[in-house]
Amino acid sequence: MTTDVPGWMWPPARRLRTIASEVAADWGLMVGEPFERARYSFVAPAGEHVIKIVPPEDTQSDHEADALEVWNGMGAVRLLRHDRARRAMLIERARPGTDASSLPDEDAIRIAVQVGRLLWREPGAQFASAYDNTRAGLDRSGAPSTATSALRELSWPS
Image (cartoon, rainbow, N blue to C red; front, side, top):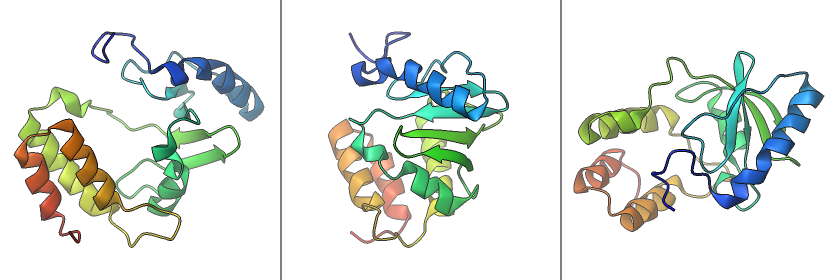
């Protein structure tokens, strides 16, 4: 089964609904159905906000809450609440929430570069190099050369 199949979810993420329900109850929230494109984490509406539970196997997300806290809404949603032990976050809901995968590649890449510029900060010691991670991910994905060119435009060190 591939990730293009509607309803497909990464196996470690399938067990997260129970954790989301427990966290939501502790935080006094009602959890809706997960978003259609939530495939690697449990991500669902929770009132006016969004609850996200990340599986322990997703080590790339270890510092996601820390980063959201640093950005504080500048180019990213705000972190409203965090339970590190359960890898749970309550985050601001992005509206209108347009799925960038529905855009032509060049438009999506241009927007990604603009957002990347908003997000850029000198990393704290707890953060891995976004440049190295992004470059490695693009290399593995076989992304079009325009993606690599866009990454270079950010002027991160090579």
